Structures are given as structure tokens and as C-alpha cells.
Image 1: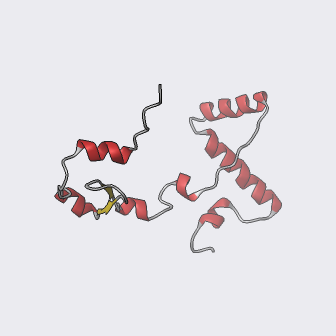
Image 2: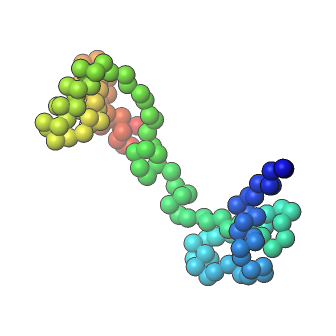
Amino acid sequence: MPKPPKLSLAAIVASATPPAKAPPKSFAKLGSKPVAEPGRAGAEIVQLDLPAARGRGHTLKERARQMSVYLEPPVYDQLRDLAHAERTKMHGLMLEALDLLFRQRGTRSIAQLTDPDER
């Protein structure tokens, strides 16, 4: 028995919506642009141009680079216990340790590196 053809999301949406319908007015406020998919009559994909999606670097996750650190279990446990005792996050303690390392080596601190006026 042959497999049924795979449906794309655009095909499902096109079959579920009535043809020749204008996009809702709420999309126009957000700066949407309806784009017709090639080869599909009556189906259109709406791309939202949201202001938050334009600018990058609003959160630390968007601005920063991720780095993995492998710690032996006792070292990890001690760091976790310190963070718990001080009611802070392990990430903050790691940044504090890096700041101390930078100070010992005579390089700029994290605050100096991240200050836009210092660059």
C-alpha cells in the first residue's frame, strides 16, 4: 500500500481557509506583508514584521556567546552550595571568578569591557 503524500503546513492552511479573503486589519498594524506561495492558488503566507524581531541584542542570550565548562562533581557541588548559601546564581559566581582572574592578570574588568563608553 503506497504511503499517503506528505502535506505541508501551507497546504493545510490553504485547504482550511476560504479563498480570496483579505488579511485582517490587525495584521496591518503590525506591519505584515502577505506573500503568495509560488505554485499555490489562493494560499498565502503572512509574514509578521514585528518591531521586537528587528533589533538584536535585547537579552543576554542574544548578545552573549555561550561557553561550556566541564567541572568535576565535587567542584560543581561546592559551587552550587555556595550559590545556594548566598542566595545567588551559579552564573553570577562564575562571572565574579572571571572578574577576579582579570584583575589578577592586569586586564580590564567585565564592567569596563561591557561599558559602551569605554570601547
